[in-house]
Structure formats: C-alpha cells, structure tokens
Image (cartoon, rainbow, N blue to C red; front, side, top):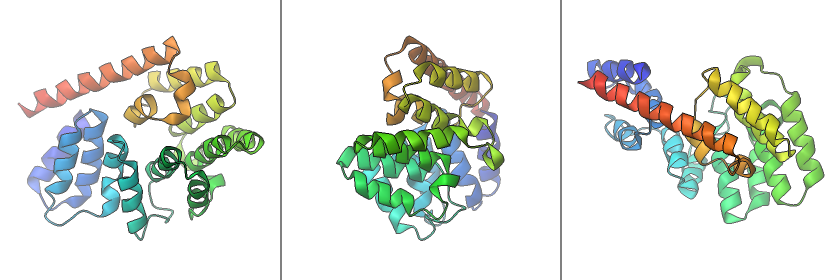
Length: 232
C-alpha cells in the first residue's frame, strides 16, 4: 500500500515521470486494481512501450495479445527484460493453443540462456512434459532446484522452484516452499502464482494450497483498503 501511495504522489508531482508508471501499474495489480493499472498506462503523455502492458495481459489472461506485444518489442530478448512475465506469456500461450514446440523454440531463443533463467527453465520443463518428454522435463526441473539464488535472491526463486517440485510430484515440498516464502513476505505476483499458474495445477485441490491462496487474497484486500484510506 505504501508503494502505491508513494508512486501516486510522485506521478501527481510530475505527470511526465513515465518511469513511475510501470512499477505503479504492477503495484496496482498486486492489490487487484487492474482498471487502475490500465489507466495509469493509458494516461501517459506519450504512448507507453508495448512491454509495459505485458503484466496486464498476463493478469487478464489475454495470452495471444500478450505474445503479440512481446514479439513486437525489439528489446524483448534482451537480458534487461523482465525474466518472468514474458516467459509465462510464451509458455501459457503455447499450452493454450497447443503449439508446444513453438513455445519451446521461443524460450530457447531468449538471449538470457534458459539455464540462467529459472523461470524459463521451469517453463521449458512443463512444455516438455506436455509434449510427452518426461525424462527431459524432470532433468530441467532438477536443474531449477539445484540453481542458486545469485542476483535474483532466494525468495524470488520460490515460484520456479515450486513449479519444479510439483512437476516431480513432490507436492508437499512445493507447498512447504510456498508457505514459507509467503510467511517471509514474498507475495510478488501472488495473483499469478495462486490464481493462474498452470504449473501448480496439481496443487489446487489441496487444502493447504487453498488456504494459502485465501491468505493471499485476504492480504491483497487489506492492502487495497489501506490504499483507499491513504487516498482520502
């Protein structure tokens, strides 16, 4: 809530501070305000780069539109690009449209090698599994689990590691990881991890996962109300 309030104030002081718009839009998604996220991008004095819309496309599950915007951006394969959202869009679109091999090719084409991008590695594993290549998928999952946090930080590797554990049918371990990370304050992109991520589909019927998802929803609602009060 504080991040939203600070970024709203910064934008009110300087409406041309487009560098504030992207983190503010993503902060709105964290509290479930997708309309506010869309508005803050639309209200920019100059059209925002297409990559700024990717998280909203993922949130709204407009996967084909998201991948169209991604491919239209000349920077999408650069190492500075977000590591998770483009990967999720590519993988989820491939799973939805059945073009699994094309999804694999696109992930392998990233200039950040898949081996150095745990999100891409975990996503490749799921696509390989969907193609019937279980041995290759499990090898990729094990590589995700053996990767070190390095510049990403251990908590930011929670979701790809949970996906890898789920693929390896280590559901309790995946839930342990998700619960521990949430308790330690890692809630970034909770809306994807708990509502939309196909990698953890086998966990959705588990009462522990359902309880954790409910905690995430409650936390977001609390933050949303705090934002509302700060605006008054």
